[in-house]
Image (tube, rainbow, N blue to C red):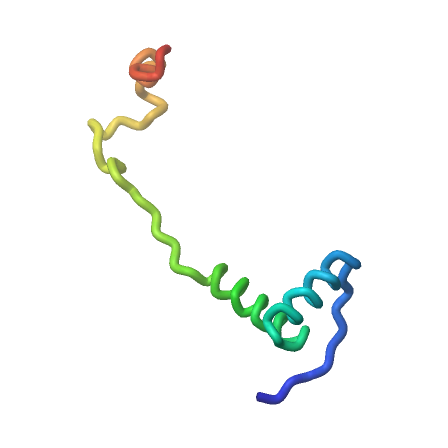
Length: 77
């Protein structure tokens, strides 16, 4: 795969972390950074699922129309 040289500005701690990871894994620092980017990107792109359990329950009234005492039932209010 063709690669392009670029510069990254890292603080001393991050530079040492990249060096340490590269040495530990027997890889180049560039390989470590590329692997980190790929992992970060896949984490962001991971499918997100949201549970909507109970979203269709109730009598159909808007929350604004429910008396406060009824809304607080079960919450110690």
